[in-house]
Image (cartoon, rainbow, N blue to C red; front, side):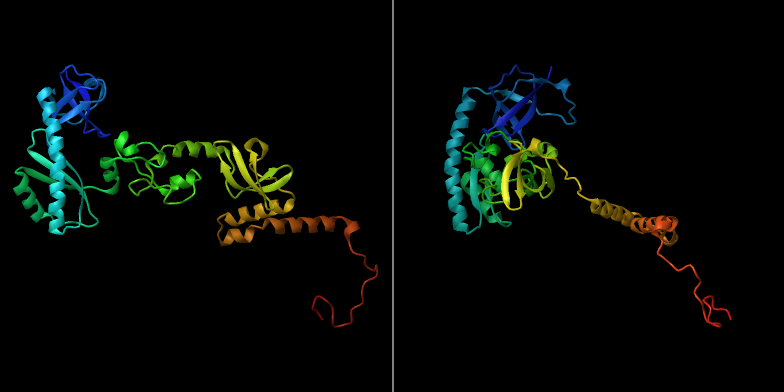
Amino acid sequence: MDRLAAIRFNNSAKSYYFSTTLDLIKGDKVVVETIRGLELGEVIADLKDMSEFNLNTELKEVKRRANRADLEVYEINKIKAEKSFQICKEIVSESGLDMRMISCEYTLDASKVIFMYTADERVDFRELLKKLAAVFKCRIELRQIGPRDKAKVIGGLGTCGLPLCCNSFLGEFDGVSINMAKNQLLAINIDKISGACGRLLCCLKYEDEAYTELKKKFPKIGSRVNYDGKSVKVVGLNVISDLVKIDDNGNISFIGLDEIEKEAKPHNNENRHKKEEREFNKKPRNKDALKRTEHPLESQSKKTASTTKQNPSHRPHHNNHKKHHPKGNNTNGRN
């Protein structure tokens, strides 16, 4: 029964899947046919049953387990690739092309050589292909790669002191944005949050979801909270240590998350009136509704006036006798 084999090439972090009927184990060297030709690969995991996966495409089969001759040819090709790389660099320099050569690889049967390069703009290398084909007497492939792929091919150490993630274990590049650095409260210093490729660090994605979850229990930066009987402003967070950085009228300090309340309580009725006014202004109303709807503050004023009218003690003092009006000048306007 066919089983699924995960195979990696040239110590790359990315793996590819092939079907096989061979009894392979992790670490075995095998010969497979890819779109580039025959290649030597390494099995990086135990075989899986095909029935466990819902595959929509037909997988290529493993040709054979690599023998001693295959391993010897592979080592010879590595030496040839180093020499071919230098020759190609010289030809590119003589041609005056603005391209930087990165690597060179031969297929196992040496029927094809692949050169990888980087360039700021599109390069017309038709004449270069003719020159290379005349020198190497085989099929030539020139592949342009980006800065991240360049770092993946060359390898190196990151700012953490460990081998580059892309070169050691990352199979695919994930999308990374500057918002991830902001979410993790990192200083937006491009030099410090960029990797060897000049792009944002891939590791910014690793803890992004964890920070998003941890920050849910913290007050927002810029909000005000109650601490020690006072209203203070939140100016920073340390989600790992459960600390909140506060500003108490210019005095900056860190306090524990359990020492504060997330929302400050209103001190007087003014905040309540402002809230009612905001809610009143948000309500959608037509012209007829505007005639019937009263502002909450106006309604309160009318209620106060009504109470005053009903309570005689609030009436102003007047004389008991009626005020005399001259004839022909009464207040109702009639003669």
